[in-house]
Picture: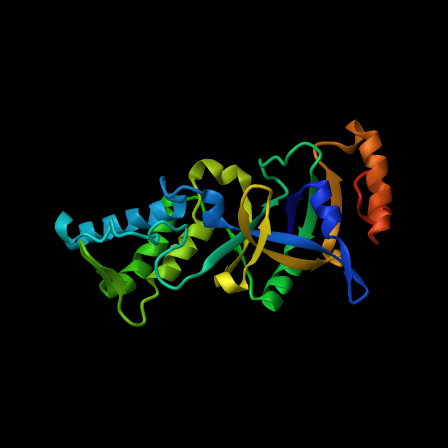
Length: 261
């Protein structure tokens, strides 16, 4: 299966380099919680797990005073979840029939999912398909929550977990995978990674410090490069891009839409 990665022309060209005499480019994973920004409303997946808790508690006939539905998921004044201090990194790719549209004159980089799986295995990453069916997701997460529910300690003063709890792992799983039904036409996949803050990279974007994780992808993984929406509308840009790809060690005649025979 082909998955398409959107990237701006300057970002793509600036990250192309040779590693061990082989051309590569960077695939950038962003901090999902940083990108979400404010804590309210919570990211969609975390809203979903609260619904799972609510449904499960209804099956137990628990009163509101005993509910764990309103437990805090975030550390105070931080865009970090409770539990182990981890950064949830992710980048988005899309199936060929996606409704997602890149920015004007961005590049679509087509990559084979089998190559990406190999990359993930070697880099301790995961390739996940976003899920959009709320009923299906609740059915998936309810038995997982059932195993973890009694390990959650929550009252008005304290939040904690018994040894062996994997509840925080469920939070990250929903954060990575669970998306609104309205986004289903996007057909989004994600490359994901959980890293400690010390393992993350940090770049100043002109106004603030941004956590990120850069993955080097062999240029041999690229199946096609196309300008969105149509290279024929931008002959000057298209001409310059042909030369720029050659300069960074790629072969546009084998990759670039319009030149590929």
